[in-house]
Image (cartoon, rainbow, N blue to C red):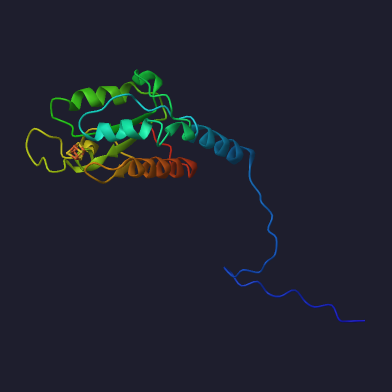
Length: 173
Ligand code: SF4
């Protein structure tokens, strides 16, 4: 009869091949379900500011098909939207309007700055253009490019989903 081997000491961080036990609380499970639901039913606000909006429209059309992510409905009312995609440069004159739309959106809500102009002012380094929409509203994800291709915007949306799944829910400022 063979001797019974002593269990091998487990070194922290080392893969042992042993099965772990998943433990969670009901609260954590509900938060996970809520986050999953939010990422599968985001309703973007229907508005565009400049040329980047053309790429946003292309992203929404059949070839790229945002309905894969439950985003086929762009809402014309901020009260029915929880995602603002700032597509284009923000003029100083438009800034209070963008802020008001953001304030009227439902909670929790998120913002994607699409393109160089929305993120930093882009090539418009002058007094008439806001040098990044984060001067007036909080931004969750920045998408670079002039303009970003639809694939870039989709990557930004997927990054936002990842952030929400990790608990990145934030109230308005
Ligand atoms: S980033 Fe380029 S494409 Fe987008 S609004 Fe600015 S100038 Fe137009």
